[in-house]
Image (cartoon, rainbow, N blue to C red; front, side, top):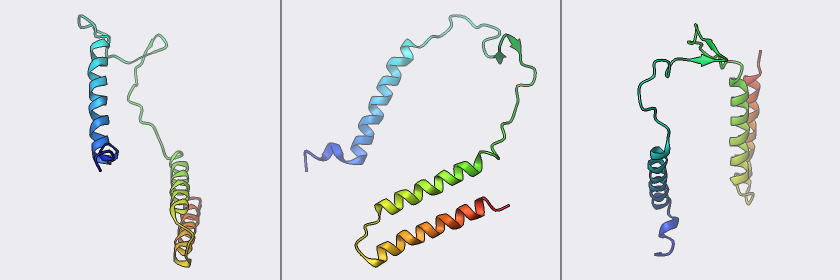
Length: 111
C-alpha cells in the first residue's frame, strides 16, 4: 500500500499541480516585462497597418459538424474498446453505442 500511494490519482494530481506552479513561478521571473508603459503596447497590430475593425466575431457554424462527428466517433471507439466481449449483454452494449453513433451522425448530416 505504501509503495502505491504515489500512483493514486489525487496524490499524483497534487504533485503535478505543485510542479506546474513551481515551473510557472520560475518562468514568470524570466519573462520579459517592459520597464515603462508604452502607448501602443496593447493596441492591435497586423502587417504594419493599424486595424480599424478589430472586433471580428468568428463563425464556427461550419466547424461544428466536424467537431460533433469526431466526438461521437471517438467516444464510440472508446466505449467499444472498453467493453469486454465475454457475454451477450456486453456485446449488446457495444451494438447500442454503434446504433447511437449512426443515428447521431444521420441527424448531423440531415439536410
